[in-house]
Image (cartoon, each protein chain N blue to C red):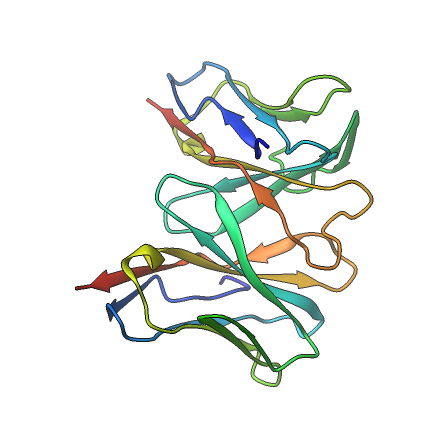
Length: 118
Length: 111
């Protein structure tokens, strides 16, 4: 009964390279959320996706960042031409279908991917 | 400033009660949550309270909500070393699936 799986757990990139972060939601979940966490800050919403659809990307930077959640396979958060300011922990969360943050609003989080840009 | 505010650190002795406080700004918040993040791990929902409630108790956890002052607290009775973690307060606003998060309070347990 796997939970939300994120990989890689740690990723080091040089400035200008691309970072790809993957998230497999909990089994049966069809809603995926990506959050960014900077040191000593709370989570900042980035994007909310359902299968093959971006529902809300209001938290995504306009450039260099993109996300997808294909019909098959994990959700991918892609950061092109990374800069030092992209260094952060990126968390993926999922929730069951038919209830985007339902009554309880419970999100199930992965362990995060920690990106370090040199 | 942050919409949801928390102190960054709280230090308590093992066996004492811990009280973690949170203030928020939006009176239309419908649900308020406490999540726990252990080192190197993702966040896990601890408990939540609906905005028309004043208090919710769940074993060692007590959540108090003062809607007038927009103040939320989490009390952990008989704090144990396993309670060491960062505790995040989050609010859900009316008609909005997004959660607004505080910066987290790191709970440090002294022996």
